[in-house]
Image 1 (cartoon, one colour):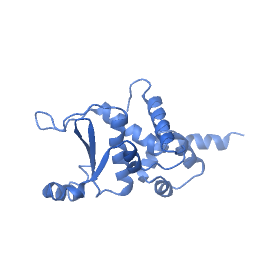
Image 2 (tube, helix red, strand yellow):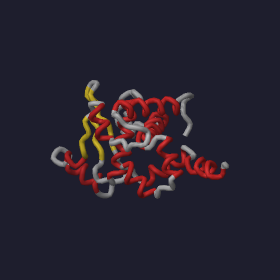
Image 3 (cartoon, helix red, strand yellow):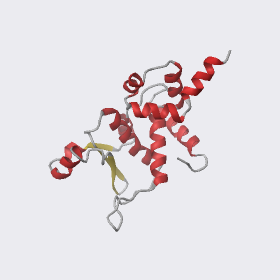
Length: 187
């Protein structure tokens, strides 16, 4: 992942500001559903769409479960996030935090499909939303705490309401494990 100059600093600033608005420290878990309320963005579980789109819900709850995580629907300036509630709670947190990150970064709305019927995908914007979602859910200082206290991945995931994959990702990209080991070796 390569980002525009200054993006990681911007993401850290956004996450710190949002956590402050929510009364959270860098070590507190952030609940994406609470953040969505704070941002006045409604979140709708896919299961609630059974009446409107029963075949689509059945597909994304079955063999297509890993194909659909979440999407933001726009109506003017209003956003609605629809997320796949068949995923684990930790994955749902990441999915919703990702969509909220698009809003926090003021990414422009795009139609879900191109004129050719292919998915519209802007890798740079998706990478930015992935990064900010991680920073929101597990800030660098929290990742360092997890590494320094040698908290098990499963326990840390439970504590922060995320998947073990998200914990592992944040420990890796922050260099928390290596930094924790260096601190132990330093007299």
